[in-house]
Amino acid sequence: MHIASDPRRPIMVILATVSAFAISMAAAAQHRLITQGNDRLAIVDAGGDIEWEMPWRGIHDIHVLPDGHIMVQRGASEVVEIDPETRQVVWSYDSRLQNGNAGKAVEVHAFQPLPPKSAVNPTDDWRLMIAESGTARIIEVDRSGAMLATTPMTVDKPHPHMDTRLVRKIAKDRYLVCHEGDGAVREYVQGTGQVIWDYDVPMKVGEGPDEARDGHGPEAFGNKCFGAIRLPDGDTLIATGNGHSVIKVDPAKKIVWSVTRNELPNIRLAWVTTLELLPNGNYVIGNCHAGPGQPLLVELEPKAKKVVWTFDQFDRFGNSVPNSQILDTPGAIR
Image (cartoon, rainbow, N blue to C red; front, side):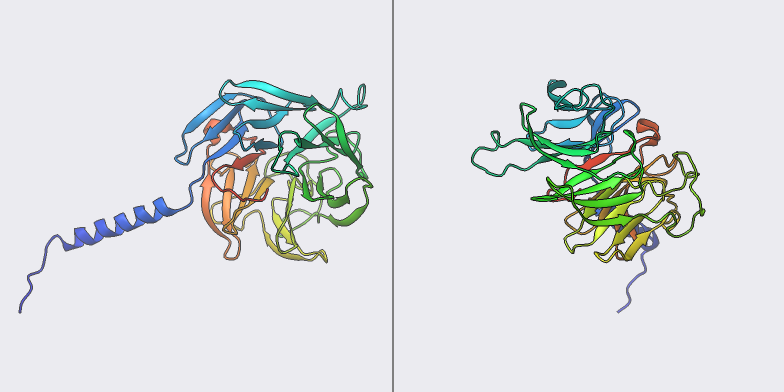
């Protein structure tokens, strides 16, 4: 039996291929997120459109609470809680003025809302961790601002602007601290301040100059680490700041994985800042001061070092976007 050829077949094949590609692209990760840049604090939906925004100056940390309220920095030393519906500050704590710091040079670059110890009365057990640069201490306060815990930090090159970047409580009595000025990550015991694990970020990971270079963009170089998270396998993922890289370090301090400045196709890592571990195992990497044409966030499948999503809104948020939070992936570690 003869089957007549269909002159439309090449077009149909092309359309089918394009359709399959479109479906594939639609199935790729697209994230809803909150970020800050160009004096605007904004939630961006999965399609890339602004869902909510208000005027806000620069930040180094941000958290969205279970009730949708936003915790963010205001100025150099204050942490505030914003009701997004009213766009009003409903709570604040200023480390420069409270709990013995009056008259001292204090900056806050990291804070963390801590989960309640009891699900019965979570409001009564509300607490916030704050890392204070300048006084080199980690504190925990309740809703009234009363101090619940204090932990001293070890700082070799003290400076209120560079003692710390991101700090996270990783266990009941443990904190993981990025010391930007020291170029080191240290794990502390709550209360005593004992350092039970530390890692000096190398000046050179992959290609790069041998000596530090000042600046914030791709021309800068150093080991001013910004973020670190403890992974479920016990390794530590570190964003090396102006080292233009992300490294994974095992408990014995061996680098077991890394991605460097020019390793990803068409992407240049600049001041590498925030990190998130998604439930699917992918890493989300903050890429600050990278310039136009470069993504502000990169989602990477680490084993193959495959880029599966990027967030590039330089025209909207500008060149200084140090912190973001992915909002549609419950269970992410950051």
